[in-house]
Image (cartoon, rainbow, N blue to C red):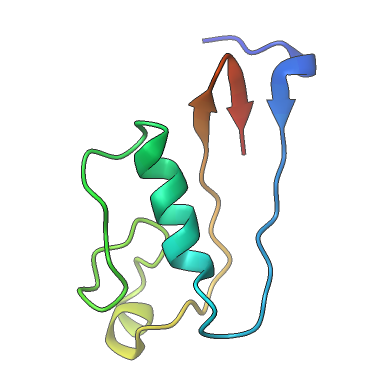
Length: 76
């Protein structure tokens, strides 16, 4: 699928530790239909926390990239 440059939106999610960045991204991806299930940090089932240390410690250690399509736009 080719996306027009004018329909691409690049978004960064930043904040202090433990404020819900991973949960927010998970909810956005789920709401956009990019995921079939809503993962949870406490369950170790989020899309963006896939490293074994991240799952064990229940924190994001690495930067993750995710995307979804929303109302004719690609959101990265």
